[in-house]
Amino acid sequence: MPEPLFERLALLGIGLIGSSVARIAREHGHIAREVVANARTQKTLDRVVHLGIVDRVELDPARAVAGADCVMLCAPVGAYAELAAAIAPHLAPGAILTDVGSTKQSVIRDLGPLVPDGVHFVPAHPVAGTEYSGPDAGFSTLFEGRWCLLTPPPGTDEAAVGKVAELWRRCGSLIETMEPAHHDRVLAIVSHLPHLLAFTICGTADDLADESRQQVLKFAASGFRDFTRIAASDPVMWRDVFLNNREALLEMLARFTEDAQAMARAVRWGDGSYIEDKILRGRKIRQSLIELKQA
Ligand code: NAP
Image 1 (cartoon, rainbow, N blue to C red):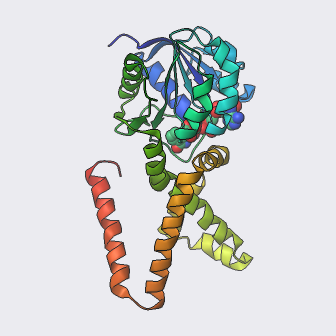
Image 2 (image 1 turned 90 degrees about the horizontal axis):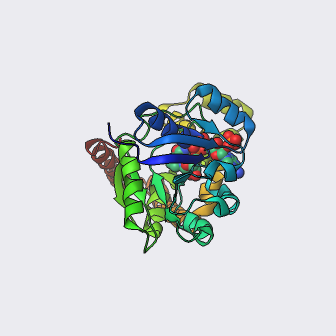
Image 3 (image 1 turned 90 degrees about the vertical axis):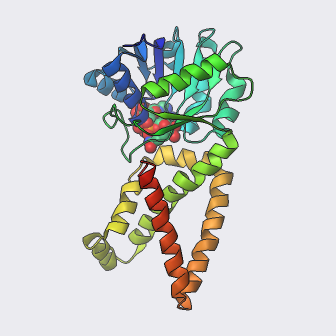
């Protein structure tokens, strides 16, 4: 087994993502010699102690990061600025500060100015998840075969970027580096817009008159069921993603709305070949995902 990459890893936020990293560290021993967890509430930390997935818990984020050579923010992105302000004076010189947030320009905007000299800031986003949240939801195979996207600002220490990449490789991820703005546009279409549609369609169904609503639930076909799975995601996490990737999300939504209007027009005018062509494109995308083992 390789030596642990870090002496002490501090996880600030220990829900689905943080607890999955903690479980991997515990099971394989190749991430860090010691893992410290912080959460917003003592209740979550008590649960983490009960689960036995970290070495130590700290309710005070400043105490959690003291002496850590790697600090990973795993809280909703809207909480980052406050967390960063609380920990900045306590980060060890030479430490790596990284994160798992689903938006990257906002994270760089919020954290960048607060990172002390001598601390290496390496933003990252493991593109893996489920609709469940909290420390019970994590599992050690969550990142296997999934992409982890790194968006280091220009001039970031190469060795620090290499260590964060290696951490995610040891979690089973495939690594790619990209520009933060590009990351946010890509994720807006593959993840943020689909969530927006799922939340909206469930809201629309829920707005129907009582009688129809009951029929919707009773006869929910697989299409609607798949949307309800996505719509069961954590409200705070997704509120923060939408508000912190505003521009890219609104751009993709505008493009989607135009395309949906075109589809509506085809339905209205009985343009069967347009409809068939769009469905065929969807099938092709699904087939490509299966071939890339990302389905
Ligand atoms: P989660 O299961 O809801 O856990 C969030 C954790 O952050 C909890 O331990 C929570 O503590 C803590 N926290 C600290 N400050 C908080 C605050 N102000 N508000 C709410 N929680 C706060 O979340 P997650 O799914 O692991 O997501 C964590 C990060 O990973 C997010 O930035 C998200 O964008 C990113 N991400 C998520 C997914 C996904 O599919 N879920 C995938 C990739 C990346 P308490 O329990 O004490 O409240």
